[in-house]
Image (tube, rainbow, N blue to C red; front, side, top):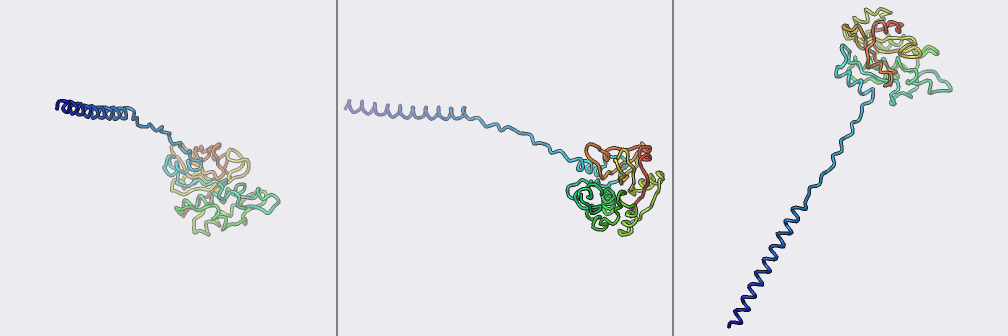
Length: 241
């Protein structure tokens, strides 16, 4: 009897010891897991800012009215890949010299004017579909007749302002953009057509939408004094509706 009780006691002790050992082991495992867990730290890679092109930035600045007393005439460039290779000029052995990129300043200027008047995008291709190369003159460029004819075609009003810069100021102040023909000088090495898109009376300066502009020039991002404009200009026209 005593032997049986002794064996029973030993068995109970063994069971208790096994249970205790198991409990301790599980507790240690849980503690180890808890201490070893470290949330992963993802490296935050800053998003690279995509820089706007010169054209995009200039148009953003125009439509956000960052320029004093400037009309919302969109800048359109002759060198835009969407139309720079469109034929405009004379049939020669060198078609690259007869394209909007080379000869299209008047066409592109009219596209800017029409886009402003219509409050929607009018592309140089739209203007070119109407004009073709009918107004292009060899060794001269685009005939000035295109301004009045384009205006008649679209029911716009076109006024030839000659060289009268006071009339230019008046029309710009009334919200009428002005097309200008300039001689070789600060804007171009050859004759050129551009749009005057604003007059800042406080500084007596003008804003220019140059269809042959580029980031290295920034003609459409800076104002020009009255003297600078008058030294370059041959003639002005205003087109409005």
